[in-house]
Amino acid sequence: MAKMIAVNEQRCMGCKTCVLECAMAHTDAKDLAEALRSPTPPQPRVHVEPGGRFGIPLQCRHCEDAPCMMVCPTEAIHRPDKHGPVLIEADHCIGCKFCLLVCPFGVIDLSRDGKAMVKCDLCLQRTQAGEEPACVAGCPTGALEFCEVEDWLRRRRQDAATKITAASEQAARVTAKDRHER
Image (cartoon, rainbow, N blue to C red; front, side, top):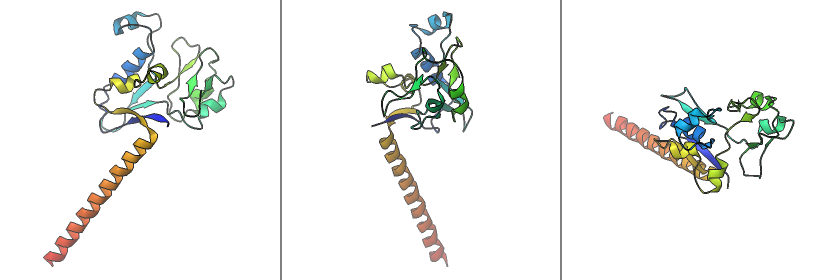
């Protein structure tokens, strides 16, 4: 089954720990100080943008019909398998920025060295080893979750059903109270 990073916007406090964890996961440095001294500083692939009470983490959604894949003239942007993430092969990327122009979420960036484009790869090495993506693992509030799409949809439907039932029961109580007071 396909997995995705889901965001609980009610839990996100905009602390940007996910940004830091992502940047560190994509560097060879052993610690933050070493990474910051590197000639090419770490580059996150997640962005926290204003929205809601504090912010919302945004990263590649690995679209099924990914527009970035469709416009890539060198096929540097590809999906290794049907349910896999959309990846960028830096060695094949010519930095034309077509992908950046068509991404509906604005989450594709030019690499710090200016040679290729970068975006979330779902921390492929981590997930293949059975770990969560770095942004998810590092989120102090649990606002990010790496989950099966179907599980997330099932929970959303259950939440909606619970809210509808509660609202319906409340409306019935108000109606009954109004009848009783007449």
